[in-house]
Amino acid sequence: MSQEDLRFLDRMNTYVKVQDSHYQLPLPFNGDPKMPNNRLMAEQRAESLKRKFGRNTIFKEEYTLFMNAMLKCGHAELVPKEEEEIQAGIGWYIPHHGVRHPKKGGLRVVFDCSASYQGTSLNSELLKGPNLTNSLIGVLLRFCHGNVAILADVEKMYYQVKIPPDHVDFLRFLWWEDGNTSQPLKEYRMTVHILGATSSASCASYALRRTAEDHKVSFSADAVNNLFVDDLLKSMDTETNAIQLYKELKALCAAGSFNLTKWSSNSRAVLAHIPEDLGEAEEAIVKFCQNQGFSQEMASLRNGRNVSRKSTIFKLDSFLDRGILRVGSRLSRMAMPEEQKHPAILPKRHFISELLLRHIHQQGDPPADGRLGKERGERGGQVEDRIGRRGEEKEEEEGKEERRGGGKGEGEERRGEERRRGGEERRGTEERRGEERRGERGEERRGEERRGEEREIQHTVHSATNERLRRQEVMQYVTGIHQQVMVFVFCTG
Image (cartoon, rainbow, N blue to C red; front, side, top):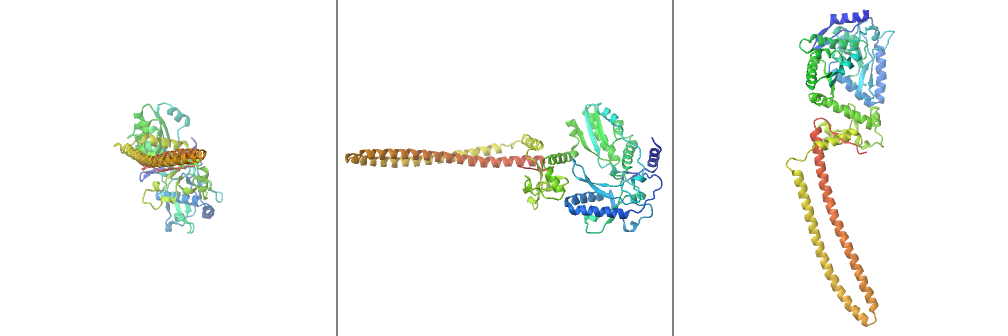
């Protein structure tokens, strides 16, 4: 370990505190900092960001949401009017910009601590600190030890470590209140260690290790030893031991205000004890599915453009909500939950969509009291009665036609005999044969019409009944399974 690393650890051990259940660690400066006033550079970067907002409204909305969430959580604060004037050498303005992971989606604001002004940057004045994470080889060897694997991640690890009040002015930044770029810039400052500072990784790892050391008496050695890294990767011999480790790690992390999230395991019994991650897992699956099926549409919306008219979701007035593609304002005025008014859109032919539909049909059962079968039976009986009545009416009409045809045939025979007596025997015979052919064609036509009407009645009633019942079943299943998580729309293109 180098001398700089030893100085880093000595400074952490000397000034570490617990403030509001969070560990508070100073910025590890390499000596006494003497920083120039770089507000002009921060203003120029803010103007560049403002121009980008003008070109991309979706980017601006996501950026504003991130900043508002950061302020709401207390990770940043507005600088009071009486403290806006920075004393010489003890303040620094950090430019910031938005980045997006190509697979994860969602915007994240990153602070540019390497930005230089007059040959100085914040990172150049900080000690990086030692690598306090466990070696990759050791982690993998321990992971192969047992049969039941569990994985987890510390949520917003850097933001759980506080900055002492005498160092917050080194983490100032400029921003518009509520993202309103028509208003003057205001001064804010971070109250936690930030992503982008060269020392943040070591400070966060130190705080996590300190949490384990300070509470090792109350927890098992397994839990303490596995809390020395931000990404938990562990395997246990039995499901019972894995569940016990999960509970202990959650409680141990909570003691230092860290939250373990994104749990995963090869055991369903273990996953059944982690209900809080189901919503996050479903959102991740939906984003993965949409990024594959609607990559062009989502790219257009992120860049502030409309969806192409050739797209299968063009008529859905789609929009992005925290990186999830949703249906637009077709039900915006309805008094119903937001996720039902604006359901997520899934591509029709994606395997996730097929699995979801298969799950819905496999999990859903008909009503226990047999109402569905009873209703279908009643509908079928009504169809048969209507067909029977139609058949009786047709038979009566055919009988009348036959009687009228019989009388007409007798008259023709008498006239034929008279014509035969008068030398018209051949013409009478032709007329009689023509009448018989017309009668046969009429009978065939009436029979075809009767069969067509019967088929039409059957098809109409059957289709209407099945369609209504099918919709009732599907809506019942979807509502039962997803009403507390998320509602989906399957694109038919």
